[in-house]
Amino acid sequence: MQLSVRNVDKKVFENFKVEVTKEGLTIGKALTMALDQWIESKKKRKENFLDLKPIDWGEGTENTSEEIDDILYGG
Image (tube, rainbow, N blue to C red; front, side):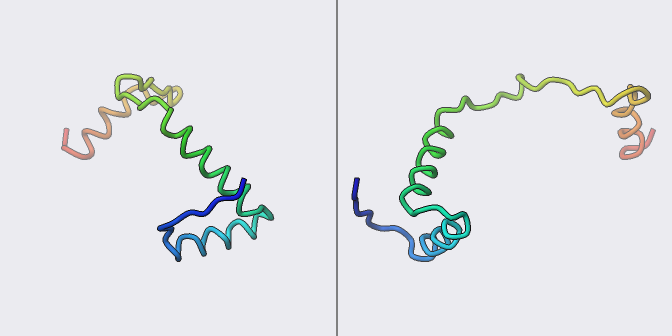
């Protein structure tokens, strides 16, 4: 499909063309990839703070947060 796009920032498009050339892609292929990525990013569920899972830093780190608090705020 052939199309024309208006109101594209000239500098942004020039940088886009440079990167496309480095990757060995066509403008059309790279633009399709960029559009797909943008669409998918809009579909992703927003992360919620409550969805964060704890991380086990290994043996001997059970009191790390308290030790950090002591260093920062005095114990």
